Length: 424
Ligand SMILES: *Cc1c(COP(=O)(O)O)cnc(C)c1O
Image 1 (cartoon, rainbow, N blue to C red):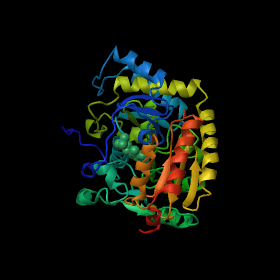
Image 2: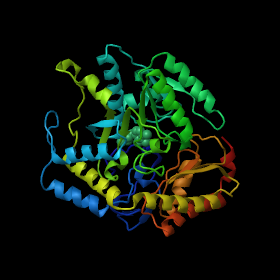
Image 3: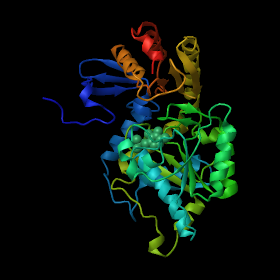
Image 4: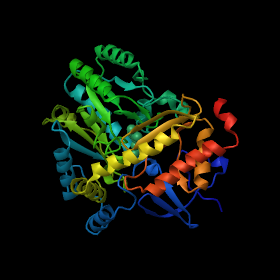
């Protein structure tokens, strides 16, 4: 019998096999039929330290024995209080308030509502959001509205709200991005929303820390709120705890999810500076922040996040990340000598390159073919069109990393329809 499960971002009509995972450990997924797969993409960017981290799983079990979900409107619990205090302690001083939700998309929706609420409560309503070209902020209607438009959201376009898009800073073109931002800021938008340093789903596109710092400066000069979506870049992905840290930038509003629980269980936070909170602070109920989801601040998820923060506090996580970066670089240097590899690049633990053509194209057939080829070799990768990337859990061992790069290299060497790589 066929499964009733309708999978995300999956074309069931292609009849591709859907492996069943029964156990995870470190950088590996184990399937029901005895297969072992190296998770080279951290299960879509969520797993940081490694799958089934013993400290995180133990914290979940302990918390689950004590308390399940409780209402969080006007009520509280220790795991959420501890986590919020600890986030405020480790992140830059201006980020003083922590609002809980349950996914990256929701954390962005919350950020947008906070920004509009801020302006409205100040009696100066503003509703335009400025975004960076090729951005991705989730698949809800709001998330799609502030993200790149394309094949992913074409049918829904009539429902998406208008935003102002500034050009992505391709190499040598940063000034055009800054000029466009400056021009937009003069129109008094509510906020600029960006993925700092790396545009993930948009094709693992990198831009410089100095440009991020310049964008922040322009927003500050014009009094436009600066929202950083660190849902993917947070928790060490780019080599520092936050990508903003590399640019010395502190956002007004910060979105975190994915690695917040080490990737074990869903949780998100939207952090805000005092002025954002204070704009909603009043004895007037009409000015409170009108947002909640049923599973806000789930105690079990908060306990997992507290265990993640304990790992960051007590273990040499940044050294592990730096070491993974070096180990990735060695392998990238070798891969980069292949004539079909374009724009080889690395930031922290993330390695990416285009195959065949220097432009990336999402529906390019190289992606599915490379994915299937790697699957046969026990490697889970999921290229974005002809953009291949490797973003493993921080615990990955050399032999597994070698298997990942060997799968890519062998594909380039042996893929029979290599001629197609140039034809699109
Ligand atoms: C994954 C992602 C999101 C959406 O997160 P979900 O948990 O999938 O809703 C938002 N922003 C960025 C930058 C992401 O990478």
